[in-house]
Amino acid sequence: MFWKFTLFELKLLLKNRKSWFIAVFLLLFFILFFLYYSQDTPQSLADRKKMETGISYAVFDYLDQQRHDLPEVAEVYDYHTQIQSLLGMQVWHISGGNDSEQYVEDGLKLNQLRLKVHELGNEGIPDHLIVPTEEILKENALLHFIKDNNLPIESDSFATNHYFTNALAMMSGLLFLVIVLINGNEMLIYEQRHQSVMRGFPLAFIQKIVSKIMIHSIHIFIFLLLGFFIGSIYLARTMEAGEFSFPILIYRNEGYLAISASQYLLYMFLGLALVTILLLLLSILLNMLFKNAFANILIGLGIFLLPDIAVAAGFKATFIHSIKFIDIHKVLSGELAIELGNSSIDYWNAMATLGISTILLIAIIYVLNKYAYQRVPKNSPLEKAF
Image 1 (cartoon, rainbow, N blue to C red):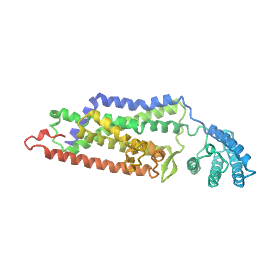
Image 2 (image 1 turned 90 degrees about the horizontal axis):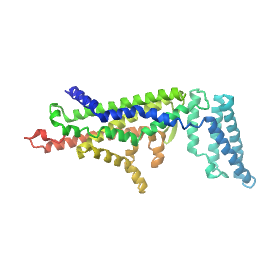
Image 3 (image 1 turned 90 degrees about the vertical axis):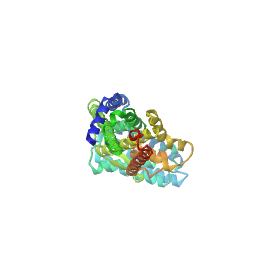
Image 4 (image 1 turned 135 degrees about the horizontal axis):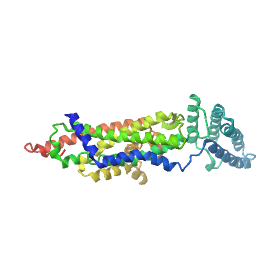
């Protein structure tokens, strides 16, 4: 009976125009994003290093004016002389020398010197010209990955990663929340409006919920993956950005780790899959409580914005930070940890919290249905709420 009900749900889904609208949106999203984003050419590695060299020259001017009077500035000046030399060599290796191995070695030495300058308090360097420790650690993680995997470096090595990480950043979070809430806003309401059709299925409520969640989550995820695959093909062929071997930084254990693009995509889509199930369960619960398709979307959005409202109001409210974990891109990049001032927010902590939240939602739905069932008069079993 479970599979007959699932087949029936699938037929309803396929006949629903809203479902096909969402499917078409997911199919076209990445292609349209890459088409628009192609107008914004990412900064090449060579250009970035040239810009760093220019900033380094500006730092020299400040240090040179003070180093004769202040011994601590003279020490920073000596380190910065080495930094300037290494930056110049990096520009040469990436632009004309084509020596990836030496580029990485120079980069690691350069970052060690920058960290020493931080230990000295960046004496004599204006705040706006200081390279943040966070940026130094990020580049160190990338360089170690490149060294360990013996990857060649070219000026546009990170171009592809730049495009699809930005696309996934746009899809993750608020936009994905709205898509899933719209998809699931009538999962129970439709059944309540067409009870004569549904009465023919002698199936437990939880089994019906499992069937609905399975059908709707598979529907969303198939078209999400297919849309990303089509967009990636377009990206590789049209924009000549087919190099996917370079690493992507993620935030973990209060630091940064470089992982391969394939591993990043695995983490990203696993996270989105869990978020999809969680949000569909939330849709079921909101359907049970309010029996209104619009309330499902509005209340879902309101819940998602609670941490932002709390921060704006000056409340720490760390107990509601987990609501924002559905933005998997921000969790992976570390943006959410910085935004909420909570260094413990990383991928695996977020996944564990989302998993526990999913189990709690299932328990609440089960208890709520039991309570509603017990309130139904025994002589009118077909009038029960869910």
